[in-house]
Every structure is written in C-alpha cells, then in structure tokens.
Length: 470
Image (cartoon, rainbow, N blue to C red):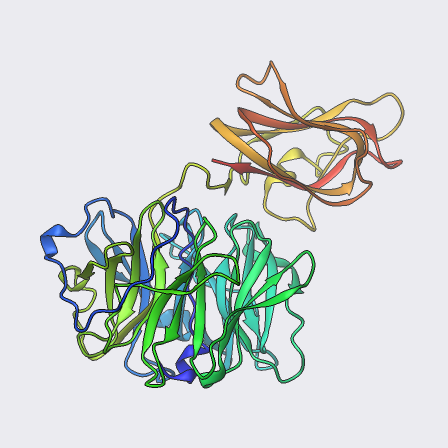
C-alpha cells in the first residue's frame, strides 16, 4: 500500500469482542472464498467504507451496506461540497459517522448524522493552516482522536441544537517539529493511545500511556512498514505490517503488552495486500481489504480459522475499477456499551432563578452558553434538577458542567419520580467546572442532581447535565 495512501487511512471497529488471542499462523497463497450461502447469518449490522480509483483523484465516495435490509447506499453527496470523503467510522451508538475530506482546499474532520438530510458538520474548519485526518471515536463516544499536522489530538464532543462541536482539543503526543504521528486509536479504557510514527518503510507503531506520558515501541521492525492500529475491547490490537521487503501488507494481532509477540493471521493472502482490519463486536469475525481479486476488495474472515468470505454477493465489490477500503462495522448496542441518554429529554427542577434559566437548558447539548439556575439566597436549599429518560435505563455515568457548583449533593435515580435511590454522594464538590462521575451502577427512568449545600454564593447552576448508560 502506498505511503501517500497510508497517511490518510483510518477506521475504528469499536468492538467489544469477548474472544482474546489467536495463535500465529502462516498466510495462504490465493485463499479460496467460502460459499456465499455460508456467510454468517449473525452479521445483521451495517458496514461503512469508501471507494476510489486512485487516492486523491476526487473519486472517493462513502458507502453504507445494511446486512439486515440487504441494501447498498452511497452516503456522500455532491451537495456536501466535500472532495474525497473517506475513512468513515461509526460512533459507538451507530447514530453518527466521523470521516475526513477536503473542503476549502484543506483536509478536515467531519461528522454526519445517519438517517437525516442534514449536511455533515465540519469539526475542524481548517482553510489550510492545519491538515486534519484519521478520526476515530473513543469507546464511550465522548471524544474523537485524530491527526492534526503530524500530531495526535483528542477533542471532547458536545452535542448542541446546532449539531456536534468540540468543546476542547488537547494534544496526546506533543509531537516534535517535523514528526509524523498518524492513525491514532484509543485503548477501550482510554488509558493509552496507539499510533503510527514515521513514513514509508520506517513507519512503525507506538503506544503512549496517557497518565504517565511513557511511550513504548509497540511494533517497529526494521524496514517493514507497520501501521493502522485497531484496538479490540479486550485490549488486543489488530494492524497491518509488511510481510517482507516486497512491501505486501499482512494483518497482525498482538496483545496490549508491547513485549508480546506479533501474530500474523491465517486469513492473509501471501501474495496479495491485506489491510484495514475492522473487528466485529462479540465475535471472531473481522472485515478487511485485500487485493486477492486484483484490486482492493472487501472481505470478511474468521480470525481463528482463517476462512474468508467475499462481499461480492452484496454488490459491495461490483465496480472492479475502484478500491474499497476503510471499512467500519456497527452491529448494534452491546450490553456494556454506553450512550448519551438524557439530551433533549423532558426536564424538571425544584425551582428556577427566572423564566429563561429553566431545567431544559441543562439537557439541550450546549455545555457553555445555556444553563439552569436555582434560586439564590438563604433558606432555599435543598434544590434539585431531574430528567425523564422515557423508560428505565441502566445508568453508568453522569457528567456535570457546573457554572456554579454544589459542595454537598447526590445523584439519585427513580422508577416512579417519587421514591429515590442514591447512586453517588459527595460532601466535597467543586465551585465550577466539568465533573465526570464514572463507573456508576444503577437503574431508573428519572435521574436527578439533589443539592443540599452550595459551593458558591449563587444558586446551583448547571450548563449541562449528561446521563450515560444503556
């Protein structure tokens, strides 16, 4: 695979596979595809990918195949005004895709809400000062990581009435001048970021532990290009690496330990390129691109057995003049997958400071310029704000964007809006800022912040309250 193509590659098979390591196995020369009728019936999700004649020629388009509906749709449209949209990846809840493309003569990162007529949102808005590529969602869907001018960035997402926006962007790698860091992928627990470094035959994989800043070589064999890391939820990493000096790509698997042994997969064709791995949630299946049929075509394989199925029967590979790359599969929500449950849902409060600072403002997706305020003064506590999720949900986290905080408060849930159970309690709250409450474990249709002591002279004030779960 050409270097110019590589620096634009990305995808994100955000998966929750329960199956761990696979043994190293030899590739197979010109492996036979399994019969169409034996294609696994359990794969009923959606696959997004792009195709083009030649990288950068303006022919790239994004497609979506729905295995349940057996329908193939071109998602990208001329009306978007985006040249060469590519490398789309599903958000963990399957409602959005993030991708890269050119507008205003610059590479930018976009987000597009599936099933709507809305145009994609340009998240980076570059006109040439920055080059933005390789977007991938974090496992919880709250952030995007991407490459910007050779460095790895992480952006916090907020969903407003005008669409998604970045509320903050930080550098994860702080690349030195002239460095080329690309294709980032966060570990499922967000403890580390994997990325490619260098270019050409010198491209290798690194792992950076975010809490300590310690960077380790993950796989960087001499003169064998190694790139495109995809991390499964169990921590195993899939990526592409040259087979030898011939420059043929093979797909490898490795545990999260940098010292572990890289294992080439038996799904590889020894005499063809095999790249862009996209693992499937809860299975040992993996989508990938291979040149077995001449040009890059899409396949699905069993990681453990090496059995391969061509996607030709679904019409995906019909146009043999175009390469099909950058696949990402969404199979539906997993049991332990989190989603934003509260945005836009009915809200109520014990009281509001005035008619414009009402509880709905804390659930409108705007974390900076709209808010709920409780009354001020003595003798008005306790005060609370709650949201109706519409049905009983499993609650795993709450984010509080305080404009004026609480020193003593609880997070509570209820099934009937009368009887409340405390999920979280603190007597050491903050005066302002973003508070992230993770690893909560409860259920309820209603979720509320119940404040009993303010941290400021003002009332309780929340720019946004986000409830996460499934």
